[in-house]
Image (spheres, rainbow, N blue to C red):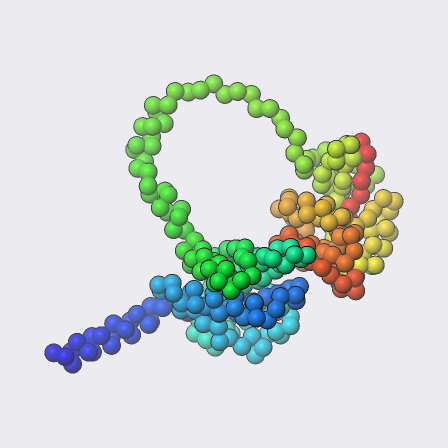
Length: 307
C-alpha cells in the first residue's frame, strides 16, 4: 500500500512538473546604458521569482545571450530575431521568452524607473502579452513592482472576463428598456492641440502637427531623412530642406510621439533628434534620452507657418 502511494505521489509530481510552462527571462535591456548592473540584476531575478510563484509557470534566468546574439547589440536595441527566439527555445526548453526594458522616468532626478516587458511565444514568435510598470529604486519597491508586472503578463484577461460575467445579459437589457430616452444636447466643438488645418501649398504637402496660440501652424515633414545622422548632420539636413525647416524641440517631439499612430511612416523603434542638443526622444516609449552629439539617430524635420 505504501509503495503504491509512493508511486502515485511521484507520478503526480511528475505531471505537475510537466504542466509547468518555462519562461526564459533575458537580461534587462538598458538602451541608454545608464542603469547600474545591480539594478538590472535585481529586476531580472525578481521577475524570475515572480513568474516562478505564478501557478503553471517556471521562470529561469540562466540564459546565455552571448552564445545566441551579440550582448551589446541586444542591450542597444532590445531586439531578438525569430531565429534567436527559436534557438533559445531549443537550448532551454522554454515555451516563452520574456524581454524586459528599463529606463529612467526622468533622466535628471533618476528617482523612478519605468519597466516595459513582453512575453514572446517560442513557437509562433508572436507577443503573448505585454505590460509596463513604474517603480522607485529601493529593492523592496522593485520586487513589489516585478510581482505586479508578472501578474499582468501572465493573467492579462482575468479582469476583463470577470467584468463581463458579473452582469447577466437579460437584466442588463431590462434596465436599458426601463430608462427613459433623454434628448441629446448639441455637442460643443472644442479645439484640440493636434488638428487638421490643411496643407501648405509651398511645403510639398507636409502634415500639420499642432496649432500654437498665435495661430502659427507647425508642420512635420512627410518622411524621415534617409539615414540616421549625428546631431550636426541632422541640423544641416533640415536646413537643406529649405527656408524655415529645422529640428523639432523636445516639446514638439513629445507631441509627435503622443500622436505617432497618426503618422504611419514614423519609425517607432528608434530615437529622434531634438534641436535642444544632447537629447533625443525614444519613439517606442516617449522618454527623453541624454545622447552624445556624435551618436547617430533618426531625423524628422519641422517648419512653422503663420496663418
